[in-house]
Length: 166
Ligand code: K1U
Ligand code: ZN
Image (tube, rainbow, N blue to C red; front, side):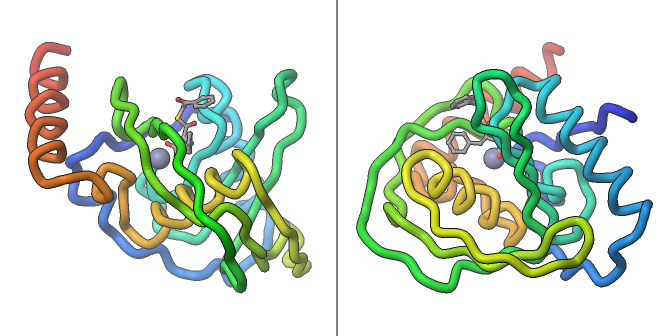
């Protein structure tokens, strides 16, 4: 397994739209293993392929304390959503920045597993928020783009300074 490099906002590559996965083979499984290792090493609860500069519709999530309940969503689609909830989000591509975002409270998601089999889940709580955050990545959207222009510009300057000094 290998640790992958995570792109940092405002890297333009984070705005790339991911393509559907069509080959469910051992290369895909190796990539999923690398994404999971990268997410665990970064202490994240989710990661989208876009964040590691691979523009395929792959998401990994693990909300468990023990980090032993990996969930993989390939070609995910939200087919139903309801309610509204506000949550203070973070993002491995926007290190050190947390801010409130309003999203749907409950979502129904259709996706495929690493073998290409289709499944549907209904999610609420942090899982629903995390799935929406990760699907946004696959569509080229970063959570800070829900914030005001002023906040986005401040975040851009702060992260550019951090990159320079690192
Ligand atoms: O997409 C990512 O960058 C992963 C992101 C997922 C996420 C966190 C919080 C709300 C929505 C989506 C993270 O894992 S950020 C890491 C983090 O700060 C965190 C870790 C544990 C619980 C909550 C946040
Ligand atoms: Zn993120």
